Length: 163
Length: 163
DNA sequence: GATCACGTAACTTATGTTGTTTCGAATGCT
DNA sequence: AGCATTCGAAACAACATAAGTTACGTGATC
Ligand code: FES
Ligand code: FES
Image (cartoon, rainbow over all chains, first blue to last red; front, side, top):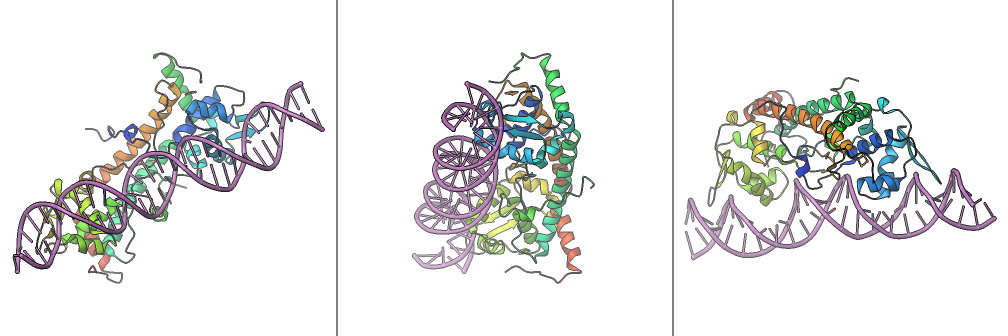
């Protein structure tokens, strides 16, 4: 009954779209556990996808200065900042701030007052929801998530390493 | 700088997806201004689209009891409830509660604790944002929007009728 | 009965993420 | 120097979903 028990199943959305944020967080936290460079191929195997997808997605993180990439032997990806210095919001922004909502406004009639009123209301609600989301993403660092991982580690059957 | 000045341009999203809610609100408020039945064709012209799209989308509203449809001469769509009895949330639900977010979770590894921690955090943030959105949609009725239209009417150059 | 208007199915289009292949460039080992 | 490794980037196919379109059936009104 509480307003926070939203029971929507994001898992149910087949493959709707844009799991980049989730994936990148996964990768970054993983990288925080090892010092060595990780290759795109290893990460791709970790996420059951293709190395090119990894490079494509992590390009934004590199440009934002959160990771570094090195070519050649022993190369790969390395964290450029400690996990505590990177918030979920930072990652989201490094990905180019992809659209948050699947719901859009109809803007067929520039002059229609009804449309204006409808869109103003929807836009207000969405802006407020996005503000909440952004605020929460900004409050959580990757180190917080890593700590949560440790917490979960003391209970369920472990599943530490990759591959 | 404040977290609430989100300057995202929903208008800029080309035709990303799902403007059904916006469109249906537009139609319903419009219907509230006239007593006569409105045909799918008229509505489609209003929204610059196809009558079949209208029937398809309004089917949910009919099943939810917010509108009625009649065949034959003089037929079309009519409100089944006054605008004050229909909230934006009601309309959203009648449309089948389409996905709110374009951001999804990655669930490739059921056993990975890192993924669990990441998804728990993201899911929490998204659930809270959705709760806010739903709360706001539930507080606004179509009558409120109609009143807002009237308010806008006393200022800018009017644009009353359709077609 | 003719016309109007909805109901539904089927197909096409548009947009964006994801997946894949391919080539080039830089790095480091031998 | 030569070669294997690894990223960088372009190009293209695959997939999913809202939206647009066509076609045909059904029911109601004139
Ligand atoms: S931490 Fe999830 S696969 Fe490596
Ligand atoms: S009210 Fe916007 S076109 Fe009719």
